[in-house]
Image 1 (cartoon, rainbow, N blue to C red):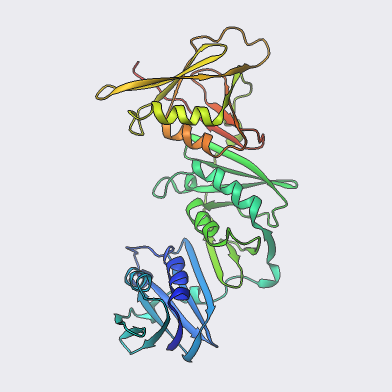
Image 2: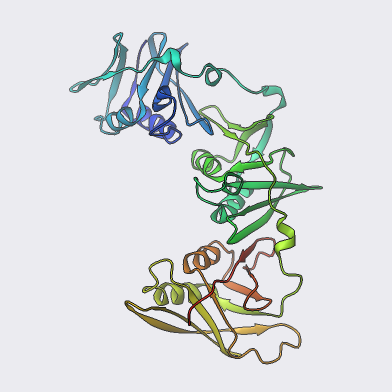
Length: 371
């Protein structure tokens, strides 16, 4: 294998593909980025088996072939290459990377142990559909904040694509909060549950593209265009019955300026250190207190202007409810518009948080305090 390209090109593609590589995989070959040069094109492949990222770009091919190079080292080398042309040469046990004034020799991994299934096309291009990225990607970013981090219960690390007639409900939850919104005209109807981490990496690759291709097979979703390809594994299991979690009725709602409440939460939770609850207390029909107290540091109180909405609300003065501060802030940050609506059914029941876009809902469980 031998080819020439530019340091700018190889840097972009290697760093993109390396995001799918596990630092400590069970299979040593998965530490590597697979390079394959055929017909004046270079293809790079990286995977942790849940997510596959491939890149394909034109090069000046001199000798066709393939190699497998440790992703971490490869990424660091190409990141620091000087601007200009760069030549890659397979020397047997090593790959030589040379520019006009630099030369590196990196030990190869055994490319013959790399999973053969990753080198093949796993879907039928004739069944692919065109996907407009803007609506889906924006919706996924809003919903994904409620997904459980990797390492948690597998089914809760994903986004659930729940199809209903001509629209798809996107849902995620980590059991402490839940986010849902809808998208229309999604060209596939069998996405199931897909890891948000993998979807988020897909968004990073394609968010500048107006339209890409999408294909759904039994176990994966595939996204691709001329330069990049990602495969995200569908998660097995049954997603929680999320619709039943929403309160059947709201006792009252608070309308608050979005910037004002975010600034107030930011200041009042300085002492919270990310985990001490923040409490919201209705003082009267026009004022809300936001406060948090850390017994080792101190506390702070913010007063925020509010409007109380609802028919026959009655007096809700002294209504108090507490939340995880990070979860509350994250739910408000993604809302559309300048207004926030906090909808309450009681101080021991989850609150529904919405912006001016009604289809997005963020359900947040309250937390107990010792106060």
